[in-house]
Image (cartoon, rainbow, N blue to C red; front, side, top):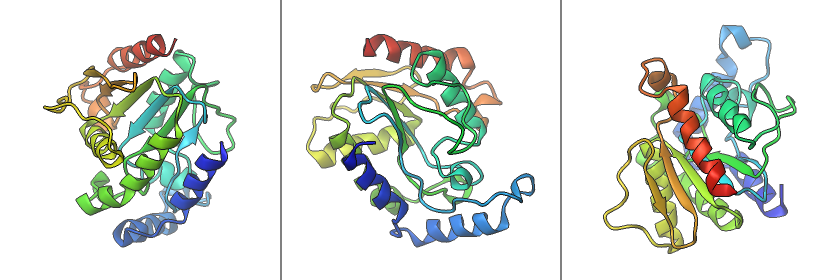
Length: 227
């Protein structure tokens, strides 16, 4: 990572702005899931991960309680991460299709992944003030990632956070805003294309709301736009 992204990551890891989230993450790290009982949980806010020269930025919702909150890396150690990194690998944005822990050798290629909220929230539902507290990190990443060509927002809440981060930075927002639909696309004045996808949560993937072909089409389009 560049020095700037390192500073953002360090600030994220040390963040204590949301007591409810911090208490929940620590509680989960102590209780653990039975299948992970021998592991030491991360239990802290989870920073972004990837290539400082990223042309693709993927924004999710928040770490999973027994995924990122356990492993310390965003979208790592859970089913959503299995879907995401398999797609990134398929289209040349990662060196391998699996993401199990911070020492698994995964490297992102011209891609960076982070989330609207950096702590695992109870019931996967951050509160409005928690989104507001965390938005500072999206804004800083938006400033630092200077080579972007594509941003993929996974879910409506990630898209809403991206719009507010743009507004906070003084960047143009379309009026009316682009409504969230899977496959929606918007070209910003900075020549960065925004793509929308359903989040690869089990709620979406197990019900068939999001299929692998649907998800992979998003990243095939991202690859084409990055070339």
